[in-house]
Length: 301
Ligand code: SER
Image (cartoon, rainbow, N blue to C red; front, side):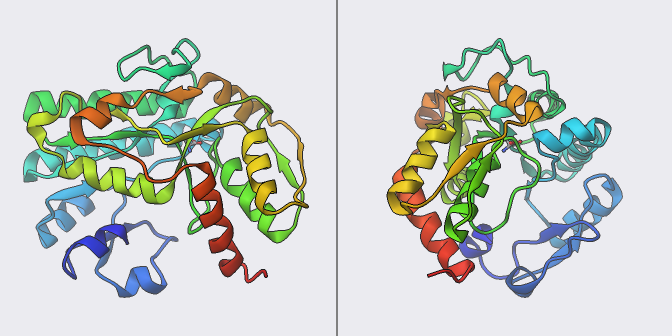
């Protein structure tokens, strides 16, 4: 929808898989096609039919789901990407494939995580994200395919609920607070992770693809950051706006181990220097916006 707002009507084709057909405004506002990343022939035909010049490859299993279904995660993340890169090479298409804070691992410096540093993740999600970065750079260096990417923090949105990520708690906490429910937090106090409000994430996805290629020293993938907090900080921030809100902990060992291996706070100075990245939201402005939007969505006064 963000891209449809920026380009003339009919120019953005929404890709979907069976069982997740677009509905409502997404369906009405432009073309949509079944585009399973595991079906290269299907993708190639769509690229040709619409003369597509850029693919946003958002198909992926998030970190906690990927630990439950590692083979499927590998298939979607890696074979899906390979299909897209091959089409990009043949039909001269630019490709954006997100990487993540999940591409880092326990040996990565956790504070001020540099752009270029140790990436030895131990989760399947992380393994596929590092491989995504390498394969995307390979296609750029070997074939000149215009691949670009950002390492997204945990993304927070009031529109679509995430599914099976380690950072999902930071979305779910707002739903609980607005519904007047106690929140049971699966991540331990003191666990810091980078997070980002969706409007900033969308801005990054657009800006990186519009950046002047002559300025890009890096491509796959850029650290981007806007805020970092632990469960206590976001809990107290929400309490400033919803004073009766309560939270308790029931730590999920799978998600906690993943969270412990991820950065506390990334250094995003390369993105700032090479393509002018700057976020607009901090924890306070995101919280105000999330609560207001969810009150409307859930029709709570
Ligand atoms: N939000 C993602 C996850 O938790 C991180 O990229 O899996």
